[in-house]
Image (tube, rainbow, N blue to C red):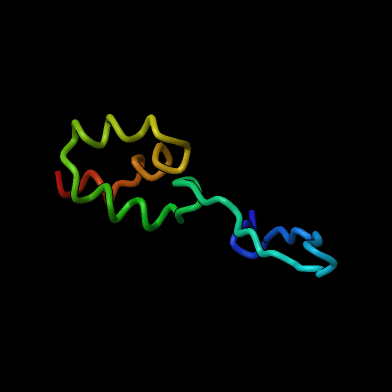
Length: 72
């Protein structure tokens, strides 16, 4: 993890001028904290929750929280 802190620097030259370019890392839904996903799942109905758990492991783990199903 720690992907938010990592980055890539590309070094190159163009017409005898050196440059460094910052390329941010790619983000995905798996980067969301599980606690944030739980709060999103609370607003979905049971059928929608069952569909989004196939997105990734974070969503699957978040769907097992009792907090999500108490309101259903």
